[in-house]
Image 1 (cartoon, one colour):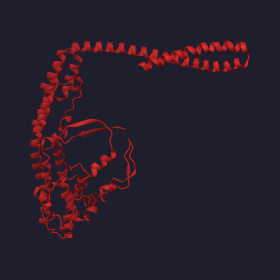
Image 2 (cartoon, helix red, strand yellow):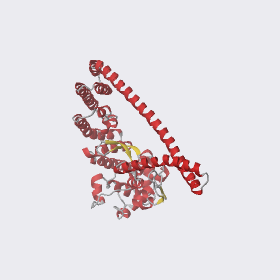
Image 3 (cartoon, helix red, strand yellow):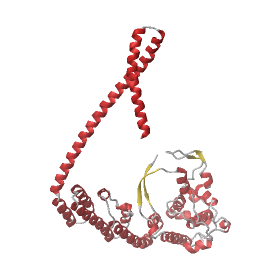
Image 4 (cartoon, one colour):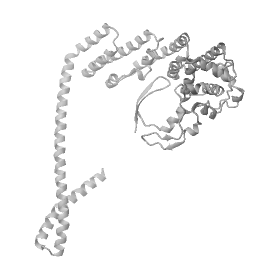
Length: 419
């Protein structure tokens, strides 16, 4: 069974359609922590990339586990990945399987009593991995960090229990380091091929940032995304389209415009630029379609352009173009309706013919079956000499009915085989 999906790719493009999932692969990819292959990065290298402070420093007891995933899985999910993939009931084509173990559900109480050293190991392992912020690993770490942000007393209590400084300055350093690391991770994605990942990361980590710091990060990201947003629409406007493609044009498949324009730092100039570009694309393509004599298509494309009007002048332009071809559109609609009526009459005639043919076929089939029965029955009676004269007559009549049927069936079978 295929499932309708809307998939946003890391580069910001999207795909919508139906897909058949391999459920076990989806589960594993969601739960996995994917370390960079052949990486020789030490924890010191990760500190250099994403920052460190006394509160987040990986303890000596956990250093030997850096780069090992089972301790991280046990902390995040309560089980190793191998255990989480153990199947109780196999998946089917239409349904996911059932698993013996499920990831633990984190609560505020669990956060307040968690092992701080294990948290630090999991945090830096995530930062050193290839995982993005849609993975289950981040879902857990994000919940922990948001809980600590909303309940400052839990943070100081955990630091104190772990034998680390828990004063106000240490807690402040912790949040400064976390924000530095997450900001660096966001900026790592700030390229054409991963622009949506950067945008999604930025919005995901927002609750952990002060308004001032988030605004600065958002502005830096959107400066790059703004350029990509304009380039995408420029590129799209250079392509050729069919009338159907123009009528179904969805610019959100090119770039995450809807989400992007909802951002506080998105510029109104870029929104106007993109909207005007699509408006111009549609009404100029409408002109070309009109010049080719496809009046219905042209009128439909002009109407589609109304969705992108930004001023009364734009609306008046479309009205003027539609008025100019209104008479031709009326003629074309009348002709189209005439053709549709004729086609419907033809289809209705064919339906009646098929219905009559079906009835005749059923009647003939019944006659054939009766002839088979009578042939067998009166053939036996003839052999036994019972009602001999009458049986012979009925047998001959039955054979005269059955044999032509068999010949016709044989001819049809041979013709089908040749095809």
